[in-house]
Length: 435
Image (cartoon, rainbow, N blue to C red; front, top):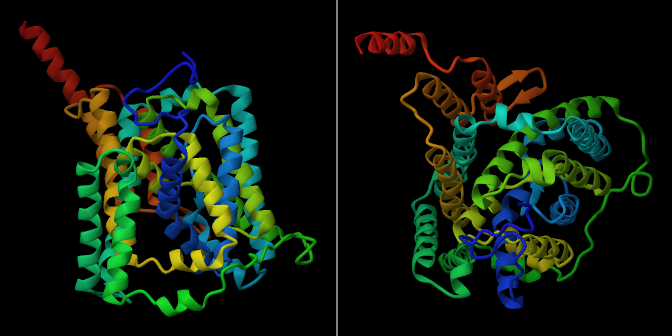
């Protein structure tokens, strides 16, 4: 059965279902709010334009959806994996070097996508069985738990009870809205919780309303286009510094595809194919690098929203992308969202990241993974602790994040470990003789 023939009746809106106009608007804005904080924090940390990052995330998402034939509901946002080399390059080459590096990342994705298109992706099931996929999906959610907790508790590096109260109120409101609202409001519990948390923050005085009030309504993003806004000069050092990290983010990309597979009851590795999903990511990064943005990747926050709402419609993600593009030019709204308090982001992240982690548990339960077998126990235990603890591998300027390293370790262990430990075989032989 092809994707178009299959319909997931357990979903409120399946991938190809198109919502009515006003629910569509609410659902799309909900996704935009969910990804906004992370997408703009990367350029803010590095010194790039948040508006361009927002614009490139929207354009990149539309390109990804088009290249994957409208079969994958994924949102493309700024990638955190490139922050360290971008900070270093900003002090030397400036954005011209970063831009070339980001384009090179996209080119690496396209080359790998071409190779996979030639050899196929049947190997995916062999190297990524449920015992590897489940723990990796759990790591994707739980490795972000520390970030959520920091946002929820800390103000300027110090614990703040008021922040924590707002975060927990936002979380509890999201839980309440999920459990007790129905109809069109029941589809946007995350958005409602964020809005309520924001309003509470305004009343407690932690939002600077003056900055929002004096901000101009419209402002053109400062695009950085090679040959137009700056002189193009090939920066090989920047390319060599950034491009190899593409292999790290590819493992994260496959992890997100695994989560979406489980969430939507499909196999995106086969349809539309891993080659198309990688090509979508790569093209999005190339476009970002050509207009002044950071490299982009699929976002776990948006996957969390889909897990909570059971709305998997690709049209909702397209709507979120369109709003992101529009908001890049509406400066006052941009400032309004950029002023979103950290405890609100932290509170809602508790729920979003947790739903991703529980999807990993679901993978192992659904496939009856036996953790009583030493082989499975060794793989799951190693992957989860290394990934959640972010035990990264640093080789010069090249860094494998905890998630990437845990993914590779899980794949290797799955391929090399025997199905039974020596003690299990001995016990099995003893039992056979006793019989």
